[in-house]
Image 1 (cartoon, rainbow, N blue to C red):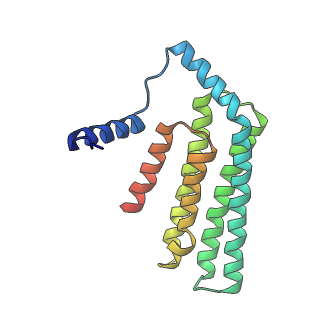
Image 2 (image 1 turned 45 degrees about the horizontal axis):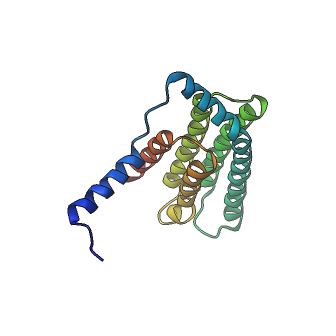
Length: 179
């Protein structure tokens, strides 16, 4: 079995990377609107369920913070607990507002839905990053870094957001963490 030359292999890999990272050209404007309308309608129920799961998960981790503070398992001061609680409450409020908007209205405009979902995920990501700064090392990465992983997981798998918004969100998180 003959292997392709090295340059062909590199070209195939480069083509696949470009196809993955560069968004496709939009349909003609009328078809694009119809597609986005159908897409938003199709995934509205999924997005509502995901926001509900996100609110419950976010709240459970707030309870977990309280249990760790109450047990004083690690050096978790009252000031750290209060700040993290405020960050958790702020995140819960934003998720709840987004959930109410999606529940009260049938958001069939994909651009608006993407802005709400991406904005909520970005806000919650900032809250977790602030928690990483509040709690001392190495505890912050042991207990709070997982929150960022969960937010990225929710974004990429459960919110049904187009890739362009997701790539911008992931790049923003990576830029902040590697700064």
